Amino acid sequence: MSHKTKLAIFASGTGSNYDAIMAAINNGLLEAEVAILVCDRPNAAVIEKAKKKQTPIFSFDPKQYSAKADFEREIIQQLCVKGVEWIILAGYMRLIGQTLLNRYEGKIINIHPSLLPSFPGLDAIGQAIEAGVKLTGVTIHYVDAGMDTGQIIAQAPVTISEDMSKADLQSAIQKVEHQLYPTIIKQLINRGKQL
Ligand code: GRF
Image 1 (cartoon, helix red, strand yellow):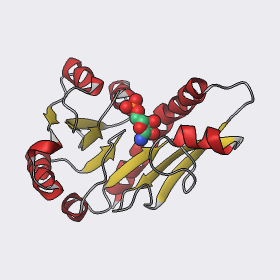
Image 2 (image 1 turned 135 degrees about the vertical axis):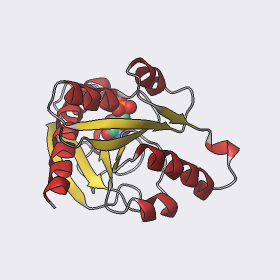
Image 3 (image 1 turned 90 degrees about the vertical axis):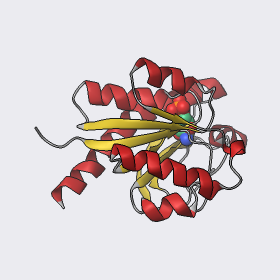
Image 4 (image 1 turned 30 degrees about the horizontal axis):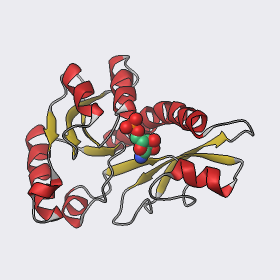
């Protein structure tokens, strides 16, 4: 049996990208296993999704820790037990600190709903609408200490048409995300296998 690359998904919200990655695994596109879901909001919808799919969950409340390094050390412990090789951020609303960056250098990626370096940070979709651009999209990038500043791996465009509401644009972007993220994860882990 070939080795299934072990992923950790970090999410804080709805978890539609978690679902898309799980679907890609289940339909055989992606030879990987989501070994753990890490969530910093114990009431997030993604937790219910992960329970249904029997993904192990580590959820924590950052307020219970005095520093980011403390909860990141605990996350690392959980990831090590599961043998996690890659960290996939999917709507994790928190900057990754030096503790995790050092341990998983070059193995943490994020998906962001704009064509970076345009519109980093919160509400990228609202920022694009506000700026009046006609083209936005999706970026997958390596994670560094900055806010959406790491090296870009892949991008895909989404056109903003005249009659589009913010909700329309969001669903057009998410549709692209759900295709692109599993595809790029597959490429990255296959590259790792060839090394
Ligand atoms: C996605 O739009 C992603 O680009 C951003 O957060 C959102 C997460 O959505 N980083 P979901 O929780 O996967 O539905």
